[in-house]
Image (tube, rainbow, N blue to C red; front, side, top):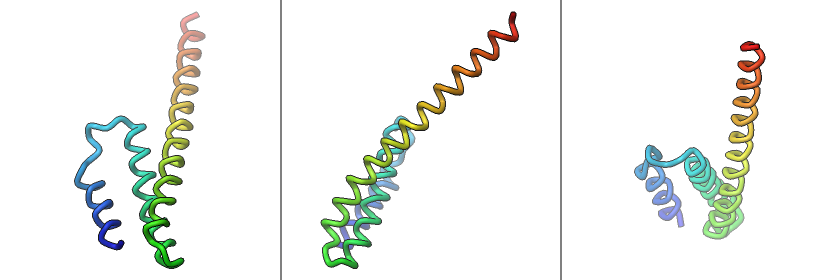
Length: 90
């Protein structure tokens, strides 16, 4: 099982994130981080594979939630910026 986790991490690093959107990058980072953490906890509990699977799912959800928060934050910033520019023009 240790080899699978190492392979997942290696694929994540070797695959690169240059051609990915920020949503894809955050989802991948969450998934890989969750899988690694889940595998470690699972290994302690006696089933690294199940821990990695659960961790990957939780990490994916966490990465997507984080992405949504960041996109909403950026949209609010842009809206405030546009509003400030409009008020300066008047």
